Image 1 (spheres, rainbow, N blue to C red):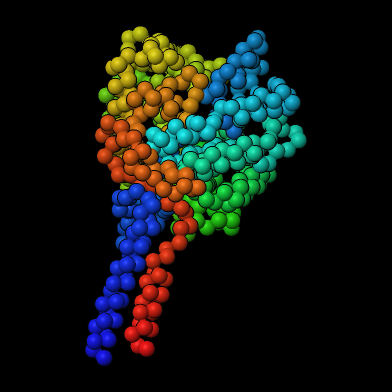
Image 2 (cartoon, rainbow, N blue to C red):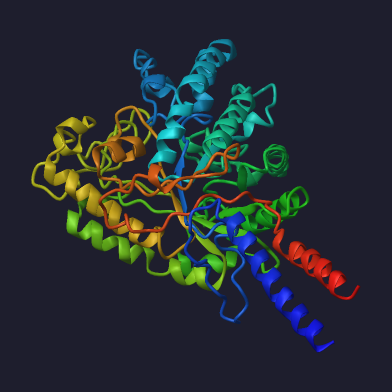
Length: 497
């Protein structure tokens, strides 16, 4: 009997080790990942909202200006209206773009744009440079369009084609409702520039929720690819009471969680500072992320400071976001760029000037750190004219931002994947020219869930020593435990016969 017991113990130990080896081998399809950096909450419970599916930070890029056009991303779409003599009649956003052209011509031009501006090759290039997520901004009118609105719909098949490419390449996706009926902020990035009317009419809120429901159901149909839902981009606390925005957030949470339980529920900070973000979060939320957008060029002071001050400003602007990430919900910087000036064509809106040269309406003098303020050379649209000094500054500025966004919080999304003539806003140009670092590839096609470190290109950069981990399948089953039990029962049955 004692011999049987000892033998049983040895066999149990051996089979458990074998099952553990199986588990390691199975997860070995993924490159060795660092231990999870998910922070713990102050009460000692695991911080379940950060890096929910992967120990690797979110390293993402926005696919902006495709399904909601913005003048500065693709100015050629708007330059056709420069022939209109009366500047006040020129289109400035997608609403007036569509109204000026009429539905038939607007649809023709936009379908060509949707079909060509983003390609599978762009996603492949981003994955090879270490990107593991993309954020796809979409206007509400793709899901909820009324006959009296000039917008055109038809974006969804192109969105789904993009999701298919992301699946093939191995990129995770965040779907982002970027514009709401009535406009949530009055910016052209909402689809309609001017006085916002979103929360002035309950009908606008209901239509926003309807669009969000349809977008979330689309995400659920692609739940092996879509990992996050941003319920609304940049609702402005300067326009709406924070309590009213939180009421919408809670309604949106119930809607999203009625469809999917395990996707990230992502909210924007409404331009509040990190010390006030807790007022936007409900205690019962799960798998939530705070989205914040950090730029250093949208006011007179920011464009007037020198390069050293811009780099120092990164620490000042991000000093509290790590604490919020640890103590509340995870934080992702959903938009940032390499720009520290506003010389970019149409960056302040179609037909507007710049603070840099003092030509923006409302400014009465140039604001730049030099005696002469010109949007040429280092501050022009042709990166081939950039000086070596300026390129080194761009790299230092990006590195300073990534030192926080890539290491202290859940991750980041660069704005944007590409542009026409806005190099500091163009991720692919930044990587090609060397001011944006490459990371090890972590995007693995779902159809081929294997990877080789031999194929990973690691840049000679301070970020090059980060460990690689492939993107795990979201719903991969843990088979080790049942295998341990079955093997152990088998051997015990043999012993006691």
